[in-house]
Image (cartoon, rainbow, N blue to C red):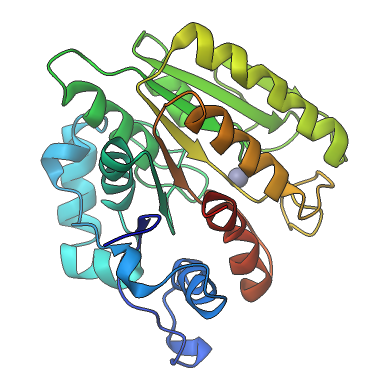
Length: 285
Ligand SMILES: [Zn+2]
């Protein structure tokens, strides 16, 4: 395959009526718009495996996984729910080979080692970070840039004592979660923030890249800072494109591979899916 690698779980389901779409219907809809608008072709698609219990256990407790996997949901059900738990790991692996890779899902940053929270059951950002950190003979350094409007509390907690993972979160201070964890760098912003002020928070990134010197960036490009988002509380426009372009260029121009996940977003599904495709559009630029 050539061109920007797109990590997507399953097929385009645009031919199905809305009632037959997955509960997490936004993932296939993002993919649908990327194809429809010719941002990508099918040739660019990499299909992830379901993440194994081995991989997940580098972050999550054995008991939680046992109850979760045996008690709640089996592999066939995992596939049906459209939760592509292996997608972030694959995106990160492909990014290390190719420099840049984008998933059509991922960003479940509220999950803790032994419990789920805020629509997140397993923390795929943390799993990918820890798995790839350890997968190299000399440990890799991973930077997680989390620009979802909610603090990446699960991720911050998981890596609180881990010097090889740097967590950077820009979030709305009054938004969920009520009790914040401490990231390596937290930028808390006020309700109602607009494009210009928000984009100025990007200025923290070059310093982090140059002092921490990561081997890989995992970028959570959550679109819930958008003004139309039902949960966001900020007032950003589609200038989210500038945000994404800035993050991608900051890393790529320094020769640092980037894997992107779509993160949070809560709106009418087609508007939402289009909004989530902003990061893929920025990545093909
Ligand atoms: Zn969010």
